[in-house]
Amino acid sequence: MDQTNLYSVRMRASAGGKHISGAERLVPHDKITVAVHELMTRAEEKIRKPDDIVLHIESLGNRPPKEVIALDLVTVNASDVISGRGMASRVLQTAGVSEKAAELALRHLSEGAAPSGGNMRGAIIMDSRSGERLEPDQERGIRAARFDWSEDAAREIAESLTAIGLTHYRTAEALALATKVSHGPGVAAELCWSDEPDYTAGYVASRQTGYVRFPLLKHKGETHGGRVFFVDRNELNLNRLIDYLQTEVVLINAVGTCGTALEPEEYFGTRGESCLNMNCQR
Ligand code: COA
Ligand code: AMP
Image 1: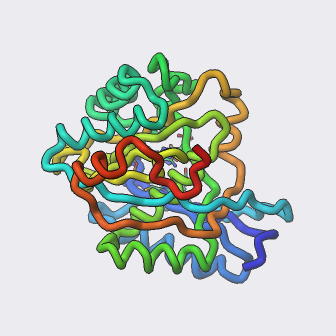
Image 2: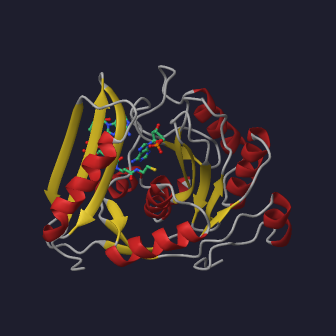
Image 3: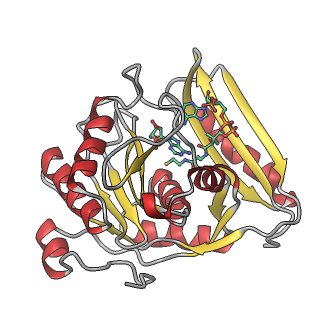
């Protein structure tokens, strides 16, 4: 794939004024039609049919994208939501997030992080020590955009994830998003679970720990969810980070390892608090 002259193809769909679906691709000119078709199918497959679909096709010019390797992925099984969230907090602390900030983040996501009480339209940016929220607009948050797998990496990650039983398209897309975010200047870690009522999985991701997936981070039927990007205040230039997350083009050109699911004692026991990611420099 020619990595210059790429196009960003973005789709967002809403019903009754409520956002219900969003996805994007980075493709060369001759793959735009395929990408549009794929994104339209995505918008239409929701149980609630969209009454408004916006497709945005934008040339990214000849500036080459930033190329990165995907985070390694591991799944840690938890028997219930409380222990899952406890383990998520523990992994966040491995990545340099304070216990206080981790607890605040978990509370925001479970109670609805927007000041109006609902879900935000993007992510919280949180000081990884104090837990202070730094995003300029707490209803909106910040959305990571303009990232994708290269054609070869997309094929490889689909194969690797299928081999360990992860066939939902969300996993590859969330891993791509988390990979972009983890390379953000000043980013220490991310916490996420979906606001989709039926999707109970969530993750903690960082360059230090890799992408640690928990199948049970919320109860089925729960409508609250969101994302928190934890930042190291000493290394942070907030405007630079926001610009990176929203506009810098990131192409993931190689996959990391995708391990089979581990029981908590296997993950925390044999690997301890050590670095899971093979690319980790620690
Ligand atoms: N939730 C709620 N509203 C959303 C939304 C979301 N996730 N994404 C977009 N919108 C609505 C908002 O009203 C937004 O206005 P705002 O900027 O004031 O919040 C408006 O649509 C325009 O959003 P914008 O980001 O400018 O649209 P876009 O067409 O350029 O890109 C997305 C839309 C959804 C493709 C992009 O924002 C995105 O999230 N990309 C990543 C998708 C992905 O791979 N996610 C992985 C999930 S596992
Ligand atoms: P989803 O994974 O699509 O279910 O989204 C879960 C939550 O993550 C949403 O409620 C938003 O708060 C947030 N979110 C959605 N898209 C993005 C994005 N592109 N970047 C950062 N946060 C997002």
